[in-house]
Image 1: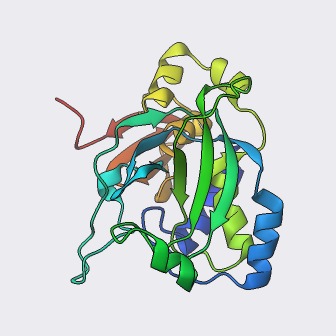
Image 2 (image 1 turned 30 degrees about the vertical axis):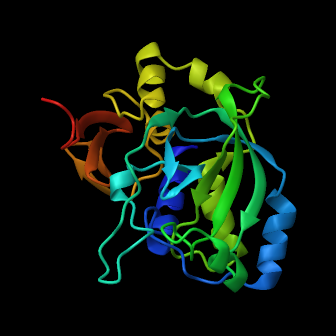
Length: 248
């Protein structure tokens, strides 16, 4: 995605969505039908590398998310404190093929039959995920993987904005393999490294919560925030990464 498109998407999504927050909004029935028609059964690719681990208290499924699991707030106590899922167990790299098995809306009947300690009131996008990265991989992982709809999505248009930011109809692997080896490795490990451009950065980290931009001594300086991680870019390239959890 080019710089202008990225900035427009981030600005729009930051105003409407919260990537780690729950979704209690009800999408109109007509929009649900349109979304299901367009996406159920669709073959796609992860745009970003994704953390993966047990789906909250349900060991029959796997959770996938582009943010660290400890930052997720889909499930809360009655006092309002977040209940994060168990720590992620691995990373599914960008460029991995997925199939949309179904979209599961939080209707009354569905909420009732979902396990208690899961995000019952959130829309679940149920995916079948390839065993490895690449368009030629057709063997799927045994367990279903669930992508959770963030807050702020109220209609088909806002759904499509979020969905297209997470999943791509175009195979990103040729582009990924054209990157410097250090950046390929960093994307697979969900790390930002100095020298990345916007496309490589978002392939590793997902879309940021916010971007601030200013001009300094003839250069464009931007700060992209991904949860607790902040990334400074100068003229479109990563110059510095601040990650409080990084060793040393």
